[in-house]
Structures are given as structure tokens and as C-alpha cells.
Length: 216
Length: 342
Image 1 (tube, rainbow over the protein chains, first blue to last red):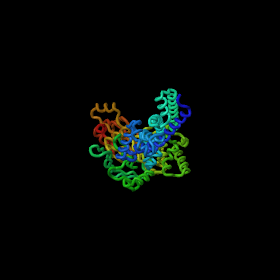
Image 2 (spheres, chains in turn orange, yellow):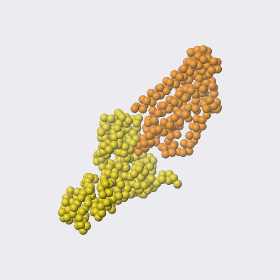
Image 3 (cartoon, each protein chain N blue to C red):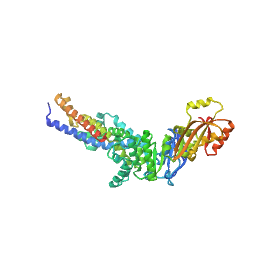
Image 4 (tube, chains in turn purple, blue):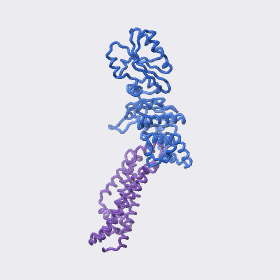
């Protein structure tokens, strides 16, 4: 084995750090974006055809670029925001560009599943649009929203591993530079093992949280 | 008081335009229970949603307590909605919230203080008979219980109007009865005006004071439940009335009648006090006729007994004519069944 345990632990921290921050920022972008994609729809709370079409188009464009290409394509933006295009902090920018629109779509789907009758009841009792969103729409979709965010988090773990390609650090970087390029099979298996445990843990936690919220 | 004046509603425009309501004119007096009946697609849903502007009328005005709600701003509409409770066919409760929270919701939206909300919700749940269910979730309740939660929620803000959108259509007959009783109790206790739409004539007969029949977006008949049920004018209305009054002749008897020649079969409709009068035996004696009762029943509409007899008159034609005249003088409606049969 070409790496020692401290390197693996450091890589693990980098991964957690990357995934954590990019999840935070992409949720901050994806949540409002997803809500907007729902309420600007025809016949919904805040019908606005042109805004819906623009948002829908933008989300689709980002969703169609493969992550490895996005990583390189937005280097100028990354450099503008964090001052450099390599390193762990720098990979957060493309990760957010990747996961933000993805989360928006997942959120959109969850919110669309809320029974239209509940929204109608909310309107009938004189709820204002912001009350309908925060007191009806989101609470009713919450359990499904948690599952959506779980899917996005697992997606981010995978994408963050790819960030190794631009020297982003983390477990993926370790697996590529040592396990793949230097044929260090042990390191490869260890990093894969950690990733598997991580994904299992995330999914189980997500499922449990969602179930607890649903209360059935 | 709710006043509809020439209300029309059109969905879409141009070639795709669908006219859901046209020229709706009617008035619901304060404290009344008003039923609107129609087959699906008649426009009932659009009509009831115009009252709280979930649907905006394309033309016409709707006045609630003499205030034209179609002229209000969005904010004013939200204020007005707090004075109009609504319950739904599929209850539309928040599944993620407890019964308590569902009923408290309209008050929480108003920003009422917690203590006030607590005591109000407890009162409401007691009133609808769910005092012990506050901490349960909607999916733990039966359909009837869910509708009771819906009713408690609709009453939370003390509205003067309650809209019932097919409120009993998803319930079994027994539960329907108990929900209707609750609605009647609400109407009496709070003097609340109730507008209900339904496709079940039984619901109308059970609790409504007045009824309007809706077909293809227009009101084809309206009046007191008693008048409309005892003397329906329009074919659709007759169909609805027959669906529960059971006052048509059975197929087999109708066949028999049609085979006989020269028969005299009449429908006699009694209302109110005449129901108790020994009419047939008197007529039989006085005009020396034989009378054969083919069908008969008595129902109660809005507390007034209403009898329905189908009688075959056997005897001389002239005697029969005189007998019928004499019957009509007793304020009993006489109809020729053979001509009337449909």
C-alpha cells in the first residue's frame, strides 16, 4: 500500500467537507428554484409562463452537461468565486452547479405530488401565497423532500469522487491517483469500501428520517 | 345573503372555450340551507367555487351580505374567505399534521395567540364529536371522522357562510346521515348560511330548504324543496325526484295497464293535512265506483307529509269524471298516469 492511514483519513475529511458544503449551497439554490418551478406553472399559485420557461430551460441546460465537462467548462467562474481552479474549495463550485439544478428538479417533483385539494383548502381558508408554501406545500411534501435530498447527497458523493480529476482531493482523488494510476489495489479497495459504507449510511439515515416525518 | 346576478364562467378562449356557467341568477337568504343539484359536468363545482372566488366569474356579480366580492382586491378576497368556510368531497386535510393542528390551521394563519387557539380547537372538536382524537393523524380516521375534522376546520374562524362541495359523496349512507345531522346542527346553532352542491337527491331532501337544479351550466328549476319535489317541471328534475321518491309505477304494473283498454288510472298527490283524510272510501261510496290502489306511499318533506297514490277507477266514465272533480276540490292534485308515464 502506497498510502498511510492518515492520508486516508485526510481524504475522508476532504470528501465530507466537499459533499457537506456543496450540499448546503446547492440546496440553498435548488430549494427556492424547485419551489419556483412549481408555483410559476400554469394554474398554480403564481402562474408566470415566461419565468417558468426560462428556469425550466436553464435547469435543463445544466442537467444535460456531463459533470466531468462542467468541471472544466466553468473554470473561469470557479476562479472568479474562489480565486483558484484547483483544490478542494474550488471543486465545490462545479459541484453546486451540478447538484443545484438536480435538487431543483427533485424538489419540484416532490412538491408536485402534494394533493391539489390541500392547496385548494388552503386558498379557501384565506391563506396568503407564502403561507401556502411554508405551511401547506412544504410540510405535506417534507418526507418526500428528505428522500429527494438523500438522493442528491449520494449523487454528490459520486460527483465529488470525480473531482479528483482536477486535483480536488478527497477519496476519489486517492482512488484515482494511487489505486488506478499506480495500480495500488489495496488503496483502491479501502477507498471504495469507505464510499460504500458512506452511501449506505446516508441512504439509511434518509429513509429513517423520511419515515419518521411521514408518521404513518 | 348570497346573491348571484347573471354569473357566467368560461374556461379558455377562442375555439377551446368551454362555458361552465351561464346566466346564473339566484339568491340564498341568510340562515338558509340551499342545495344545488346536477349531474357531473353540469357546472356545480364551478358554481360553488365562485362564491369564495376559487374560480373568478367571467361575467356577472356575486354579492355576499350586499358586498360585491367580484370587485375585491386579492387581499380583500383573502379577508372575505375567512368568513366563508368550505368542506370538500375528499376532505383535503393535511396528512402530515394532527387533527388538532388541522383544525387550528385557519387560526394560526391569522396569528391568533396559542392559548386562544387551544381552547377554540378543543371546543370545535367537542362540537363535532372528536374531542378524543386531537392527537391522531388523518390517516388514522374513518371517512366520516375526516369530514368532521374538515367541518371543525371550516368553522374555526366563525364564518357566516359554509360551502359544502359534495361533502357526503365519498361516504356510506349511514355516515352521510350523521354528517347531514351535524350540518343541520351547525345551521341551527350558528345561524350559518349553507350552500351545498351534490348529485344525491337524498341529501337535498334530508336537509335543504331550497334547491336549484343545474344543467349544462344553467339553472333549469329552483324553489323550495317541497315545491320542486312535489311538482317538478323539467325532465331532469323529474329524473332526480324519481331517483329517490320512488313514486313511479313498477315496470310489471305499467305493462299490465298498457294491455288493458279503456282504463282510468290516476295519480293523486296529497299534501299536508289532506294526507290524513279518508278520501278513497268516501269517493267509492258517493260515486259508486270501485277503486283499486296500485301504488301508494307517504313521505315527509321539510316536515310536511306528502302522499302519493296511484289508483285505478273502475265504473262509468261520467261517474269517474265527477269523482275526479270532487277530489280536485279537496286540493288534491290529480294526474293521468297513462299520459304522465315516462
